[in-house]
Image (cartoon, rainbow, N blue to C red; front, side):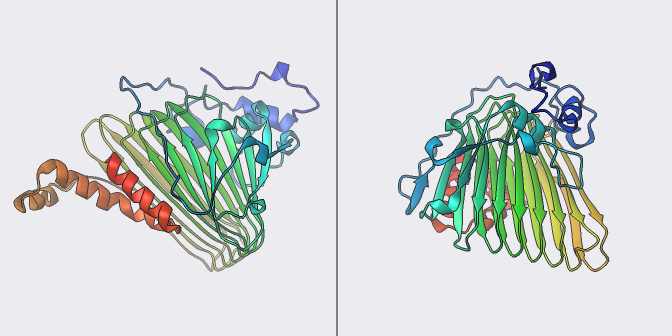
Length: 365
C-alpha cells in the first residue's frame, strides 16, 4: 500500500522540484522518517472487530449551519506546494494531499450561524477555511467512518482578532490521515478539541503558527481504539507575547498503540512566549503501548515554556476504594477513565456541544 504520487503522471508545470523531492520522502514506504516513526504507516493495520459507525445528531442545536459543497469555491493550491513557512520538515501529508486532491475554500464569516458543521464525508477535497471577524464561532468537523489511504488537509486561516472554537470528532475510522494547519495573525484566538475513539489506524497532524498576542489551545483525547492512534503536533511562536497550551490524553487497551509526538518552537524574536505541552497515557493491560515524545526548541531567552509526559497504569488502590463503597469493578474503572479524560472537554465553549461531548464520552466508555 502506498499513497505516493506517480510523478510521471503529474504535469511538470504544476509540480515544483521542491514538491517532487518532498514526495520521495514517503512514510508509507519508509518507517524511519523522524516525524512519522511511531505512525506505522508502512503497515496494514486491521482489526477483527466490526466498527460501529458514528452518526452524530445535532438536530436540537440552536443557530446551526450544515456546510454543503456549494458553500465552497474551487481553489488551486498546487502553486503553494513549495510555500512552506514552518521551521520543521515539510509534512508529507500536506504535499501529498495537495498533489492528489482538488481543493476548495470556505469563508466562515459568510454564515450568520454560531455553530458551523463540516461533515468530511460529503467532501473529497482539501479545505481552506477563513475566519476574519471577532464574532466567535464554533466549527464542528466530523471525520468519521472513513477508510481512506490518501491524506487530506484542512487549512484554518485566522485574521487579526478573529476567534474560533473547533471540535473534531475522529471516530470509527478504519483509516484516516489528516493534516491540520492553523495560521494565526495578531491577537487571534483558537481553541481546538480532537475527540478520537473506536479507530483502527489514524494519524492527525497539527501544525500551527502564531503571530503576536495570539492564544492557541489544542486538546486531544483518545480511547477505545483498536490499532494505531497517532498524533503529531508542531506549534511555532514567531512573534512576542503569544501563548499556547496543548494537552493530549489517551487510554489504551487490548494491544492497541497510542502515540503523541509534539514540539513547541520559539523564534528568537518571540519574547514573552508562554508555551505548555503535556501528554498523558493510561495503559489498561500488558499488551498495549504508549509512545510520548514532547519537545521544546527555544531561541528566545525571556519565555515561559514547559513540557511533560506520563505513562501509567490504573491505580488498583482507587479501584479497591470504590469497591469498598459498594461500586463494582467495571463501574469503578469507568469512573476512573472518565475522571482521567474529562479535563480535555473543558476547552469547549458552546454549552450544547459541551453537553453533547460529555454524553458521548459516557456512552463510549
